[in-house]
Length: 168
Image (cartoon, rainbow, N blue to C red; front, side):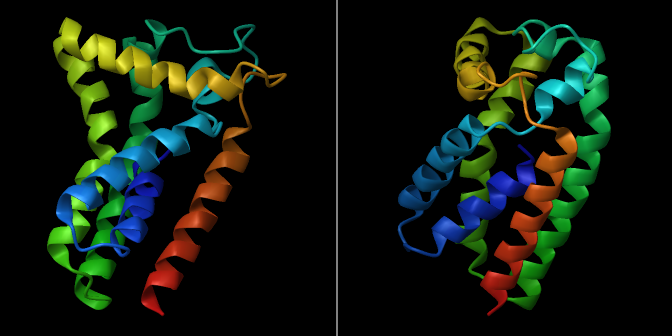
């Protein structure tokens, strides 16, 4: 799932409370819930003709897998920055709540990145749990995941609807 999707979900949830720990907690939990939904990353990493149905944990952190995801991450980061500029400076959402929501929503992916660069065992345990969440539903799908094209399209549509909703 794109970071923008996670962050926007956290931002929407942040509008329901003024309690910053609750904003962080809701955003963090929303990431876990969203990661249960198949979102095409298995097929991006493995390729559509792979005989594998799921990305094995250790392959998910290989250099080859990492390189395949970098272009998506760059575009996602640019979109997220644009969305934040729009929400903070045009819509004028509370900047503290917004930033706490984004941090909460992206915290788990931050742990994944820390594991990627440090290989520390503490981060490995957390990332293994995160990886398993991604696989709960995808293991039952015939191709092991949904089409990345469909997933990306739905996440873009979601982002547009959220931005439009927050601007009303």
